[in-house]
Image (cartoon, rainbow, N blue to C red; front, side, top):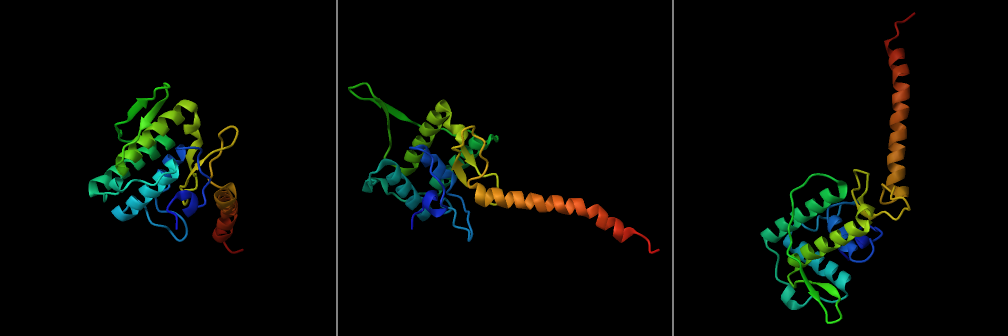
Length: 201
């Protein structure tokens, strides 16, 4: 079974390599029943990194890139995820740095020289794609569902970037129904309270 969020949660993918950033956000534990946090242990994180890299590049990682992840690697991945969540939601967070190498071909095309090591690869990819998306305006379309019980990352394809739910029929309807019930309780509560406090005639 795929570990990618598009398969685990049925989320529409962001375009191009920006989907790598979205996949990082969707490594958290979600769904019913709740699926595991993919960055909670080395084996899961390693398999997720292999799968997301293969999906992004279309190439199988070389054997030299399959070194086991360390506790330090996991802490760095969690810090990266927290920083990206903060950037997407506009919340304060600790800064993150990544070393990114660029090259220019004989034809003058500039590209990223992606490292072999999985953790270094995800850092450079996420940073580069975040930069490009911020420049193009697509970063404001990468969002986290406003349903606190969901929190899935989605790409807002609405014309005016007004989407707040990863799926309006699932999370939007659930939140609207909850709000409607709350309003009805608030409207009926004073009358009921008055009846309870009314002295017998």
